[in-house]
Length: 118
Image (cartoon, rainbow, N blue to C red):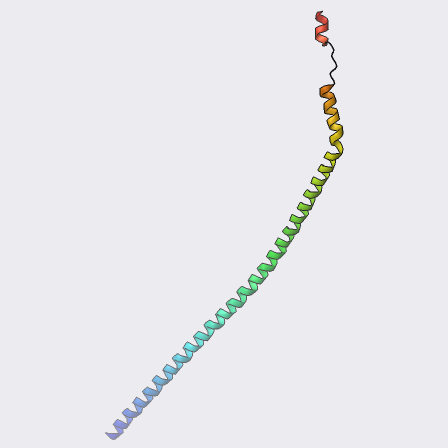
């Protein structure tokens, strides 16, 4: 009987060791999963930051070129306005004289259709 009770004790101890090893393995597995999750999150964050940086660079290049186009268009508009103002100042006096002479200088004469009737 003692050998049976010793055998049972050995079985119980072996079962306890197996249970302890199983619990330890579960803890290691949990740690590895947690570590893998943290590494994946870090890798995702790194990738996201890299892609955002590339996007910002491309956006800066596109917006920068649009900004230079905008400045170029603004400069051309200013130049055109300056030319029109200059042309207006130069030609205003002569145009006013032409308009006033056309309106005020009346040359009375008989209309050609009326002269046949008389």
